[in-house]
Length: 116
Image 1 (cartoon, one colour):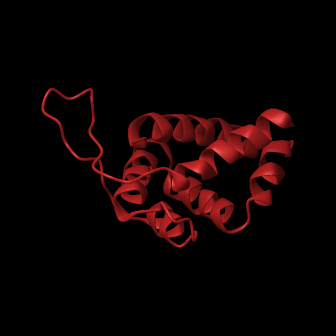
Image 2 (tube, helix red, strand yellow):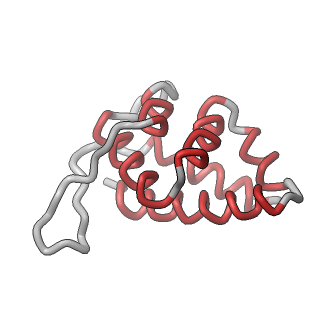
Image 3 (spheres, one colour):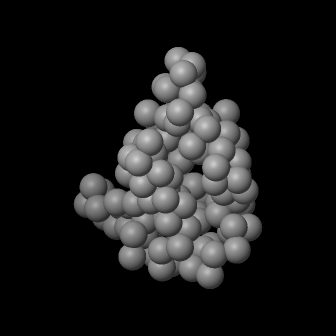
């Protein structure tokens, strides 16, 4: 349970990180990671002072590579109601377990890719 709270906090903390251009370090020519979608919108609407368009766009770009559309819609709820993440994490359904594995992967990748 403690790990779930820590992971959720880390995921939501992404929206509080500083903004700026984001570079894909795996590509020989730097490119800015940026996309529009439901995660970006929820991030920008979160009310966090550091939730810039660049940061939220980077998080969306990572979401596009790691989460399905349905996963993204489910994750958007975490921005509005953080307790929902704990409910999903503690769920005993196979669907929620599989979703949570994808969500953890997304959060870890976003933190690495979008950090200032």
